[in-house]
Length: 222
Image 1 (cartoon, helix red, strand yellow):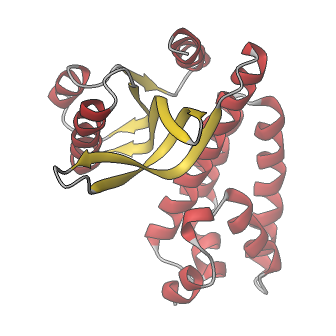
Image 2 (cartoon, one colour; image 1 turned 180 degrees about the vertical axis):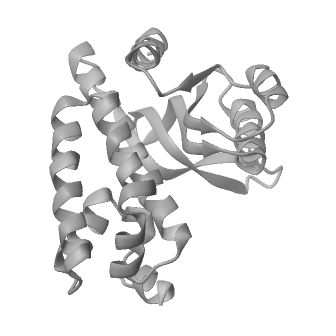
């Protein structure tokens, strides 16, 4: 049943509203009620860009309304994870775009787009998808300035992938800044020290002070 839901939308372009609208259109009363509640909180954090409002939204998805979401959308636990992940990415996108507007920086922000991480001697390229990238485009040529990995939950496999991609990306774009933003750290604590040797910054998005530090990082590296 989960497959049916996934096939009906392109996950690359899925957004929080994709899930909320499906809930509100479902024939399940609990699903409709969940969709209405989530829509109200979604509109709140879209307006306020408050980390507290956003974390409340995440908690509703993960705990309070999880069963209603899964039952109404006939999905599995992975779908709840995707819902949270896309929501986190959108929250970061909104923060970044607002900051760029304040700085009057005419830069582009890519969401789940590919960047080259390896160029073979034959000039063939291999590209990887990155959560968020702030780029400048000159004569059609893209140069990433800042790349952000957005992870609600950081575990060892996700962290290793981020570190591997960061190393390869910096071989092609040595000046790019690479940051990791997370909510829950589920990997070994020692891996935090390891990650700091390869990443330019790590942010734990559980307080407004970390949001400010993140936005300062963006401003400093543009």
